[in-house]
Image (tube, rainbow, N blue to C red; front, side):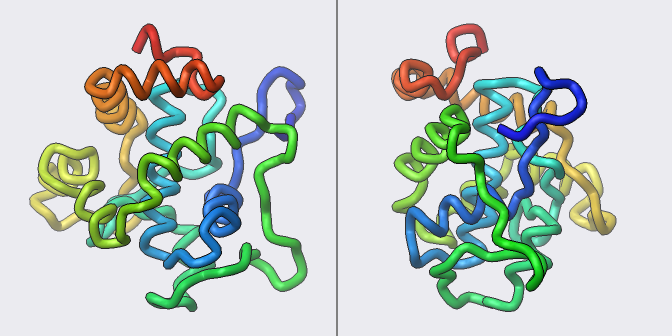
Length: 188
């Protein structure tokens, strides 16, 4: 992980860096699916690692088809529904952002996320992330489904959902913990 002024506090990644890891894994994934996989990574990180440190430098927002990372949308919208086969950059002058090679905790989490959700279609992931009871749905309902632009989903809502998922899938949580993915798995 990258470190800031405090050497013990990692700097969070861009959503695009997380998405690029999934692009490398799949070589054929669309923008919608990337949004949902990145959201799952965000949620499982909160449930297993807590905060701080946060996994990403932005929070997901409430959009029509579920949680969306605005910066990721701005970069990947040019693809529409077409598959993305190469890591992307938000600037033609910069290389694609990546997860650090030596960041084993994050890399293990992303492999686990891909194993758990990678087989699902974009549509199935979209349905999963904005069905009734999800953090997205709770915020949308609070605003009578007329959500103001740029409304973020609070971390505590996301933490609660993914902690409940972890409790319901304790065998997977224990497996993820053994792999080094979550040190809080046993206590969440």
